[in-house]
Image: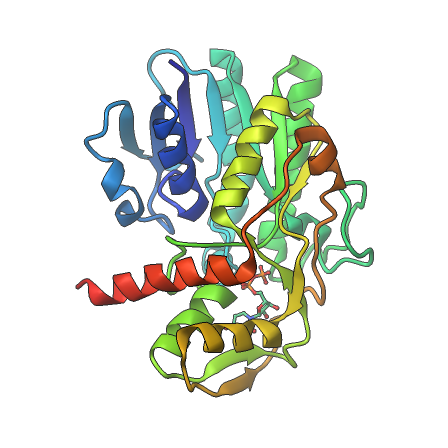
Length: 313
Ligand code: UDP
């Protein structure tokens, strides 16, 4: 049986990974300091054979007794609102946390997959973004705490691979959505859905013509596991190339919730990327992976999740 450590396992993507791995028969150690992760995300996993939760900050020394085959490093605040609220912790988890994870992997002879991000491309001057693009990041802007932490983490992973021959993977994750996103994490999908469900105005930042491409979480998990099995040490983009403006997203959320909410424009956050869309040619060729869930279907499932949450005390 494979023994896997998932850091950030109580977070949005981490909890979906834990669930999938358990279902595939792995033993899963879920580690999280619960700053942005939540026990609610992993509640259904408690009591299942092979699941263990450890509350720990991975920027401190990590001790895991026994064997370890794989580490999936997903610990980090990931929404702009969260990493702006925890700027130093975000830098620490990307730097010190990634270092601790790599040291543990070396000690255990485990392979490591690190969750990187499309933010390494910054406000991109190449569109769509391929893995070969080096990015356009403001190194001292407010978003730099996340962008530069992830860029440093990628450098660290590559150094451990080159110097110590560690088996490593880097996935650059583009915008992802789905059940278990935190309602108040400030990202556009939960914001719009909750605002629509409550009949509040939808907050569109800037003119709303900036674009993103959203991948449904189940597709992303397929891509992560495919990278682990069939990938190589070079970074690979994982995301859905279906690109739309935030205004189009707002309209779709209104249509699917049946809400009569109006739109309210608010200032664009500093360094908010104007466009973002992954080029997933490499993932298609290397992994035979591509996302399948259409935005409408994914939004329906995510709306159902938030409706159910709202209905429970
Ligand atoms: N956004 C918006 N309204 C909101 C939250 C976000 O218009 O209530 C915009 C934000 O300015 C950005 C896009 O939606 O252009 C995606 O933002 P998010 O925070 O979800 O993720 P990002 O891609 O910026 O990391």
